[in-house]
Every structure is written in structure tokens, then in C-alpha cells.
Length: 500
Image 1 (cartoon, rainbow, N blue to C red):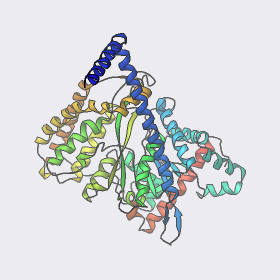
Image 2: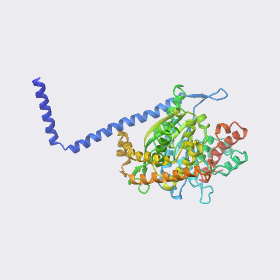
Image 3: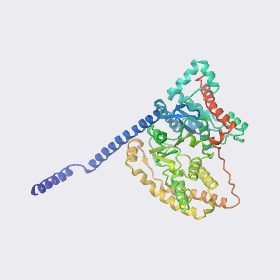
Image 4: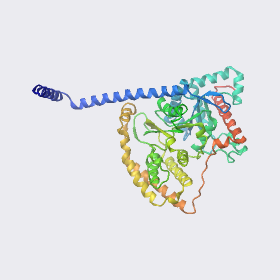
């Protein structure tokens, strides 16, 4: 016993003596760096395994078509794009899209994804079609995606293949559809699919992408992700692949959540960052909590990031959805799942940290208004009263306070320390001003709805499932798929990459 006590005193004495000769701050910093390295190695290993596991699942999965023939499972990636100003073609916003193509090419080469479909909605000031972004994207794909480059090379080498491509019968791995394409609009009108033509808006663009794509799994990605990585895409695909092999694992939709950073566009390589996700974080999440207490949309308040633009689903499920034509499309999908009692079929995927270039405040205000309009259109609102505005503000204030805790996760801290390398700007004052602006819109729309001045209308796209039950719908989808190929060929020709 005396020996133990003496040993303990000796160790304690030596420990304090070492502490006196060591700079405590340096010691803490060293321990912190070691912890970061450990977390980083562990995270990197786990992320590499996600892509490998998804590939193994895909390679071992075959599907049977309506004729009884087996075929390998295919995955399509759909990215909506929009040119907000000519400067975007040469600035950091375009570099982000180009870098996304580089990441997707890696997965295309490995065989995890099978096609990339870009749906561009760029317009001129006179509301005409603007092809400048589409032309540049096809040129980038030609340089960044070897498979696409080889497919284009074959067209120049063999005239017969070029003739097939002119008919829309060639299999490009990268395709572009323009939302305002005259031929698509004309065909939609002629077949009485959409008598007024294809509307503008993100939802309408995604809907077109579904029709133009061929995959059994459809993955949607936004075009403003600055730090997209292979493992993030794989993480969204993997749970859906698993459902084809394990009947107990019932998932229809995988949906991303993340800690979102808004990068300062003036100094994107240094500068500062803010907490992103203004509409999700400051508007929809607190509003869903308020609605849930009234028994409306109950269950959706548990989603960590309801408005993420990164989600995937099986084709038969995606084709059963009626997409709102505008920026309320993600909200519309969630409401449809709630109405079908399918919230438990959503599988949330943690994509860790997303850096993105934020939209203007005016664009965000328009988005909030579109979501409110959708909510009043879809829901039985006789249970709502003016107290909803006050309750929303109370919840939104709580959200602002809770936002800071998002950055306390070890993995987030590691990534910020090693990759972001920017100063964090805490804009609590701006967030408070924002929620009051959102409350004003909510208040205005609420009273308009209660009065006779409110027009309960919303442009929604027909479901592909119902559409393709008709001969006209089948014709339109077949035309759309061929048009994606012929339009891509036209863009290649305009870039002097193919002579037609």
C-alpha cells in the first residue's frame, strides 16, 4: 500500500514538473491537431467505403422488365441549371458546375452512374432561349468526361452513327435539354400534354429531366455545390440500391441533410462564410414545427433539411409525383409523401458540409412566397389562424440560437479547419431581419387567402406515370428522349466539335 502511494506521488510530481516546463497552449494545440488528424483519417476511410459498397450493390443487381427480360440497373443524374447573369459564365459559379461534372465523371467511369442530364432554363431579357450556358457546358463535358469525348469522336469517325444521332437514336452519357426548347414546347402543345407549353421554373425543369432520362434510379443535384465529392453522391444512391436486394429495407426517397456554408462571392477563395440554408433553416423548419402542433404535415418537422436539392428515388416513385413548376418543388414532394402516409419511406443521408454560392435576397423572398402559396394551395387551412405568424417568429428565433451548434460536430470542425480556411461571420442580426421579412410575407398571404382576393391556383406538372398510360404521353416522352440527344448534337455542332 505504501509502495503504491509513493509511486502515485512520484508520478504526480513528475507530471506537474513536466507541465511547468511545457507551454500548455502549445500542448493543447498539438493535441487538437492530433484529434483533427484522427477524425480526418477515420472519416476519409468511411467515405471511401461508401462508394465501394454502392458499386458492389449496383453490380450485383439486375431488374426484370415488363417482357420478362433481365437488365442491369441504371442510375441517372439530373442537374437543373440557370444563367442569372452573363458574368456567371466566367466566374466562380460556372467553375462550380464544371467541378461537379469532374466528380460525376469519376462515378461514370467507375460505373455507379450511367448518364448525366442537364436541364438548362437560361433566358434572355426578352424571355427567349439563351444557349450560352448550355454551349459552354457541353464544351466542358467534352473536355472533362472521357466517355462523352469518345462517343463524340465516334460520330466524327463513322457517318452512320452520326445519322443515328441526328434521329435521336444515339446513347450519349451526357445530355442537355433546354427548358424553353421550341420543339419541346410545340410538341407538348400539339399532343395536348401542356397546351400552354413548358413553364419556366425549377420544378418544370426537373420534370423534363425525369422524362428525358432513362435510369431506374433518378438522382437530383443542385448546380451550386462548391465541394461535391464522390462519397456524397454514392451515399444518396446506396440505400436505394439496397432496397432492390433487401425487401425489408423499404426506401422510396433518399434525402440529403448537411451543414450549409454560404461562401462570400466577392472573395470565394479566402473571404468569409456564413451559415447557409436561409429558407430551410429560418423559414420552413420553424413553420413545419408550428403546423405540426396543429396536426398539419405532422412528421415532416423531424426532417433535418427539408429543402435540400440533393435527393434520389426509384423511377416508378418519381414518376408518380406531380411536380410544382417553381421553386416550391421540394416542398411539394414532401407534402405528397405526407398525404400518402409515406414519410417513413424517406431515408435521410448526412452529407456533412456543403459550401455553396448563395442566391440574392430577392430570389430567396420569391422562393418563400412560392412555398407559402403552395402550402395554402395544398393544405386544409381552416385550422389556421393569425396566431401562426407569432408562433412562427417564436420558433424561428429558437432556430437562430440553435444554428451555431451545427458547427460543434468534430467532422464539421475538421473540414472547416482543413478545407474551408475562412473566417466565420456570424450574422445573427441579418437572420433576425430575415425572419421578420418572411413573417410579413406569411402574414400578407394568410390574410389574402382568408379574403376573396386570394386565387387558389398553382401550376403543377402532370405525373409521368399517368401521362405514359396514354398514347400521346408515350409519344411525348419518346420525343423528349430523342430531343435530348439531337439538341446535345446541335450544341456540339455549334462548338465545332461535330460537323453535321
